[in-house]
Length: 106
Length: 118
Image (cartoon, rainbow over the protein chains, first blue to last red):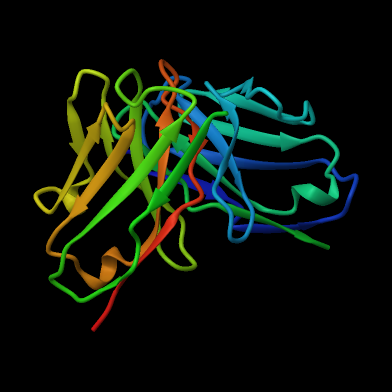
């Protein structure tokens, strides 16, 4: 199985901050990388697919990047509704998820 | 309206069986790739199974031989038959549509809780 390692596991930030977190794959996955946001008690919501494509209805402050094995998700200006946990997922082979990055209020 | 609604989660004893359902509206299960993903309490997401539009099925290693994914095209419903349940199968189970060709999960249900305990 392809392992995905997200860093950091958690971060503290303030509204308006620019935040970036990373997802590293244990082997090459081309651009088959997606990002999800999950709030407590809710289902995950797709934000980004194919590394950098914005899912319909998702605000443009969410930006995905990277290729090969190293990927990033950037929130350009953190909003109150963005405090949540973010997961990456690869679909190059049998799907796997990273362990998540929790964005908390500073 | 596009919607996935899971049901069937409950408390079950180790070794028991359970069938989860996912009622789909707004698109056809037969024409899409449909997945089950689970999340143990306080843990991350784990992909469980997928059924392709051609009927092919795949499973994560830990459930192979115990779980079976299927669909009823007339009912537009996805199922997950879970046998020989273990405590480590305790989780919220989500059904989700797998978008192609990206492989992302673009539509999710609200989840149903399965608790395996004596």
